[in-house]
Image 1 (cartoon, protein in one colour):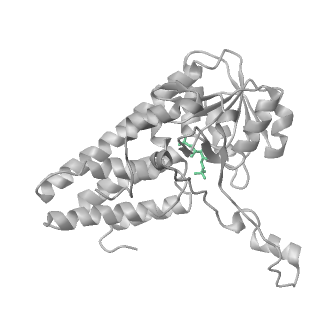
Image 2: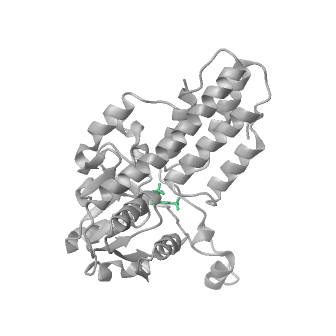
Length: 322
Ligand code: RUB
C-alpha cells in the first residue's frame, strides 16, 4: 500500500478486489469517483506532492483486478485532466475531469442501449450471461420502445451474477427463465439473440468477458443464434494495438470449492494432487461474434480496430504515466 492514499480510496480498492463493486463499467465509475475523493482530501500545498498522491491512488486502484480495461482507461482519462500550477487548480481540474468522466460513462451507456435495442424485435427472447450494465441498457431501451422481451438468464458459476441480471429484469417486468450454465445449449433453440457485455475488447475484435462467454458463443453460432456484445468504447483495450494480450484474472479456488467441500473430497489426506482452477474470464474470437454495440454505433468485430485507433491513437504505458 502506498503512503498518502486516502482511506476512502483504499476502501474502494478493497471493494473492487473483493467484488463488492464489480462489472467493468461500475468499476470504472467507482475508480473515477475515488480519484475525485483523493483530489478533494489530499493534504498538501505542494503541487508535485499532490500529483504524486493522485498517481499513488491510481496505482492502488489499478492493482485490484487485471482484466477489465475500463479501469486503467478511467484512471488515465482522469489523470490526463489534472492540470494547473497550484494545488487549488490541480484539485479543481481533477475533480471536474472525474465528474465529466462519470457523466460521459452514463451517457455512453444510454446511447449504446438505444443502438442495441434497434437489433431487438418485439417478442424476442434474449439469452444473457453474467451481469452487464451495458447489455441491460440495450434491454431497457427496447422495453422503453414498447417491445416485449423475454430472457433466458444463465446463472453464471461460480459467483452467480446471473441472479443480479434476473433481479433487474424482473424489476422491469421481463419474464425470466433462469438456467444453470450447462443448460445453455439446450435453451439456445428458444433464443433469438445472445446478449453479453465485455471487460475488454482486443484490437482483432476478440471479446474478453466472463468465463463461459466463448463456449456460449460457439454454441450460438452452431445453432444460428446471433451473438451481440454490448460494450461502450471504454472497453476497448489500447495496448492490444501494439501486440499486448489481455491478462485473464485467476480468482481464489474457494469460489469454486469451499474448504469443507475440499475436505469432503480429500478426507484426512493432505492432498495437493487436487487442483482447482478458477479463471474469471475467457476470450471469444471475432468469428463467433456478430456485432459489437457501442455508443458510436454497431461494428463487426473485425473493424473495431479502426475505432480504437481513432479514440486512443498511440496510447501506451501505465495509466499514471504522463
Ligand atoms: C463482469 C462481467 C461483465 C462485464 C461487463 O465480471 O464479465 O460482463 O464486466 O459489465 P465480474 P458492464 O462480475 O467478475 O466483474 O457492462 O456492467 O461493464
